[in-house]
Image 1 (cartoon, rainbow, N blue to C red):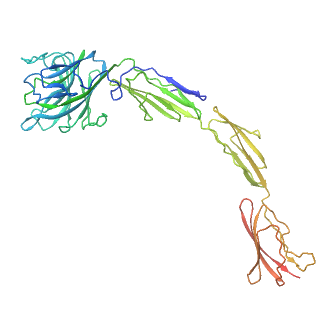
Image 2 (cartoon, rainbow, N blue to C red):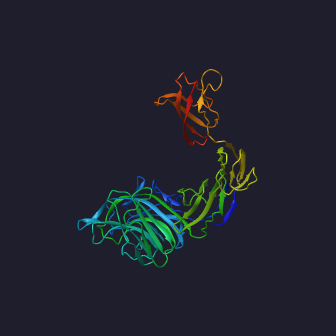
Amino acid sequence: MRPNSLCAPFIALLLLSTLLWCTPARAQCDFSSDFSSTNGWTQVGSEVEIQNGAVHFLNGAKCREFQKRLQAPIGRSMNEGDCWEARIEFTPVTVGTKYGLPYSGHMILSLTEGTDEFYYECNDPPCTGHNKGDQDGIMVGFNGKNPPDGNLYFFISVLDSLKETQSTRIVSLPLGTTHYVALRKSSANSAELSVYSDPNYSVHLPGSPVSLTYSGSVDNLTHVQFGNTIRGESRRQLTGTLDNLCLSWASTANISLDLPEDTTLCPDDTLILDIGHGSNLNYSWSNGSSDSIIEITEAGNYIARISSACNTITDTIEVSKISALNQQLNDVHLCEGESAILRYTAQNATYLWNTGATTPSIRVSSSGLYSVTVKTACETLVDQAYVYVEDCTCEMKLPNIFTPNGDGINDYFRAVESNPNCTLNLQVFNRWGTRVFETSKHDFTWNGDNLPEGTYFWVLTYADSMGVEQIETGSVTLSR
């Protein structure tokens, strides 16, 4: 997308028009049944019947003996260019046997051009003659290999008039386990079968999904059917249930997605992106959201995705964000002759210091109050700092003699010069190393404490206002 100018504080609502179909994981079903009622369903033969809120395969539901199936009109005609998905829950309980191995042959889900059995012309049992049918259809089969190898499996079978095409196989879970089956018409001349182990339709069985590409066209699909296939052997048997049918569809035309131009947010801005166009849509975003509307408050690259059985389209928007301004400057203490840099850092900002400078930083060496006005497209802030320049000299001058005789002249040992900005520690020792006096005061006085005359030694430790420490030594004579 092209960069856009900065957004002022706002809440933006961007409506993006789109028209397409979504997978029923999130979509409403256009045709559905929980089989709590037989209304709308036609039973052909027996042993494949709606009972107790599910489709039941009863008494083995043997193939070939006579046809057994359920059918219902879906309320529209679907053609090769349409997209659709059908989902159903299937729990096989028992199957027939051949050579002592599992054996079955049933269509657990099919969409057909009419009401005939999937492979043969047979509106009503007993379907004598087994004449090949010419109606189009797409079916999910549940079979055992002939001759059997011990596996039961799912596959796609597509019938274009008299030409049949079958997919590779997905081996089923053990009998008694519920399978979650999804048959998708994903594009022209292509179908896909997924079988899942969980009700969220998210954990594929090994080998799932399988796709089938076929030639010709499969058009005018008007009915959904479940049942056996009369071309099978009678030992192909099945008991089990089908439940919760969901069929959704849409046209592949007019799919579009157009996010707005790249933009920049201020600190308190919220950008709202809406790519919704009704409830029968499937959305996902790169931030993990699966809603049609998202609120954006942080910078990032946001990818919108809309998927259907026919297509997946994406678009991207790059969102930048200007950070909020805050107080950054701190007071500075300098020694005479030193300098420091005052610096303010902000994104896409202009600066004006009270010195007249327009740069992010200035160098200072004089005492005073320094301030900067910082402006972004979102806000203005004034920050300031005081600079203290001090005499950091810590030289202390001490006398080399004092005479504590009470005459009022030079009676005390005390500093001749001292800088109160420094910290100090003064210790005085006699000739044997015994400490006789100690102080940390700049205005100290010591009268000798009646000690004998003689030479005394001092150690002076001091630190300037920057924390730099020095040590000096010397001596003083006490004389009365």
